[in-house]
Image (tube, rainbow, N blue to C red; front, side, top):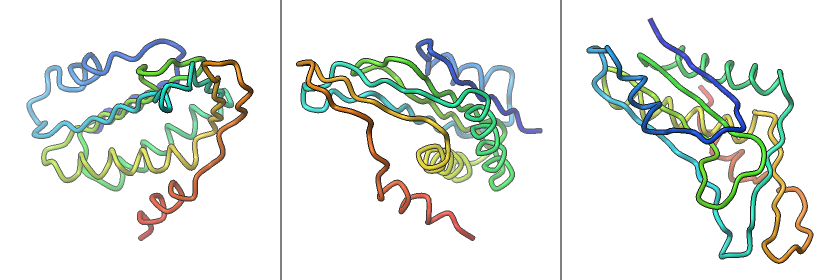
Length: 153
């Protein structure tokens, strides 16, 4: 049985705690793969990144993406946590933890989740410059669409 955990939160994410939680009391896990996405400082010009989401829809979409990954690969557990609100450089934006009997499934499930989060989850990013210069909303990238496209059957 697969254990799925998804969450959208304004609170900081404890990556090590999430990894420990996924492993607790499980002897069927042979591999744990984690991805932690951090807010960059964009060469010192960024004060913060503001993430907005569509409540209700964002949770549903992240749950759908996680369930799709769990159906596609033999994972024992999968955790996806995404932050919203104001996030400063160096802080965690997203954590994906995938556990499986063997490493391949864990690696691929985690990568699949990230590729689909970037293109399907209803989040919007706005940069706040350190010098107060208006920056605006971050545009979607074609490279994210290209990464997602490789998962087609």
